[in-house]
Length: 601
Image (cartoon, rainbow, N blue to C red):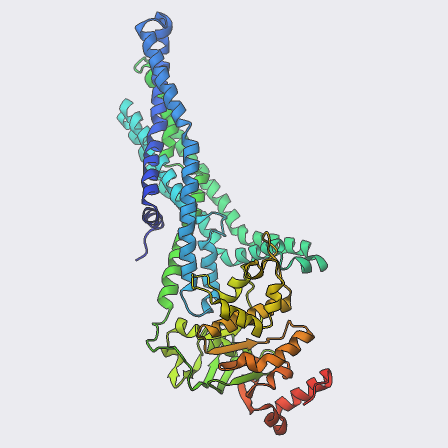
């Protein structure tokens, strides 16, 4: 059972930083006591002024007034430190809780071995909320915000207790009023925050357009095609669409608060009148009158709401979504298989009547697909765009599971193998490979978890991938950060990045991966680099089970076997020469490319 957001926040805070939590509790008590103590001290000082004036400062009354003034001044001076102390404590706590929150988010979204959840709108909505994107409130600030508001509430309750010392029914009446009103007031605050949550998807789209304008990736096309005004318009329109219910809710809330304010005004007017009547009849001393008058506004902290409450509720709204992400994504992961994957496949990988349909789609991308990848050989997959070639690779890497059929590794169903261990057996050069803003060494070796780098293997894969000269030409060699956004960093061209990505996959093979997948491996290479890749193809794929996806027949013709993917299934298999003799789809595509590029058999 999931904890209430307030309980969860405090529990996480206490668990993550016990010392800070204890300090925050001490601050909360001081926050509750000190303002009231200062007001009482000031009131008593004011109460002693008439006697001190009448008898002189040298009199006992004057001495008492001076002592009280000194005490009040000292307390007030200490109270002035509350702000800086709270700011410093909040900054430290928020920094600590930011680490905790982000770690939980990363662990949650990384828990599934597959990637389906990263395209699920419900998960993305929760992720945006958990990160505080909806209300621009950092969830990590919830702990100190909650403790601060609790201190304010206690301060208000203590002010009511002081009022009760004069007339028990006065303090009790004010406190009872706030206890009654606080529930509907908090309900109004939660209702306002709820309107943001219901507009999550629209807000996400709005923030997307805002982020697109800020990011460097789309900056060139935005300027070349004059899209800046369009981006601003789309962001404004979507934001307005998302916020209209919230604005309407705000107007409704303001009307209800106005009605409740009339009740509050009446209670405080009656309280002030009671104090005035007591003063008129001299049944209250000047000092007590000053104290009680200052306690009246202080007592509002017992139940009133302000901007801090809206901010706190906005922060707390992210807690259930973060808990749901952690719980649902972890529990949704299937139990890991128990079979060992080391050295697999030794015989073959078999796709048996495999079908796959993306969530929300009405059509299968793959349907009744049969394919055998013999261990230690290279297989090329060809076909027009959109026939499911990359989807096939996604299933092979078990980033998704088939909607029908089975994938067998040496006769063992892939779903019976531990997913993450199997993924270590597959090295992929994706067409849209990741460009990490890390050093060249880290980009290839991916030693980010502390695994020692094999320098000989690193040099070997750089040569095989055609990246050795590239690394030698970098200002810092392997230690150069491959991003111009950092001091001393250096960005690469598309073709250079593709060689780095190829070296990354080959290094994974050196470290034990048994399947190498090359998805359009020459897409960003120039003519000379492409020709050198063809010459090295057999060396690159030697000794591993390799899958090559390419539109360039100069690449695929070197594979041991070629499979033609059409209509969601494999329609032809064979060597380059066999498929040409069969005069089917492959032969037709080959002749079209020969006519265009002048390739020969």
